[in-house]
Image (cartoon, rainbow, N blue to C red):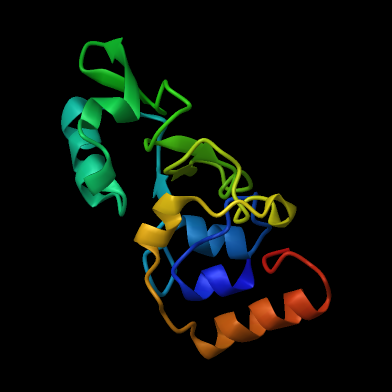
Length: 153
């Protein structure tokens, strides 16, 4: 799990404050490759298309409409309807931050959500982007790992 942070992945479990607030408000050193955060759970067609274009995994989704369900009157409820394949699925990352919604590319549980799962999807091999953490982030993750804690708790 900890090495995945070096590859650009964010936690998919519910982060605890104050780290959750900083992350979910967009205060991070590098855009994570497995999580995007929105301010609302619904969007217009143009907003949804803009979200699709900025997804790190957008090249694996053939149509922006696969990211949400139509509500009518140019409104879409975020979240892919099929639990199979690459899409937009709710993540618990920002559960502690009101007005922020985290989304991940796959419905399945990965080791970024629960360490014990050991699941590392093929898509994540394609998305990984080696990156160095800033000293403060590295220390935080190392200290948490040494205590046997999730790094953001």
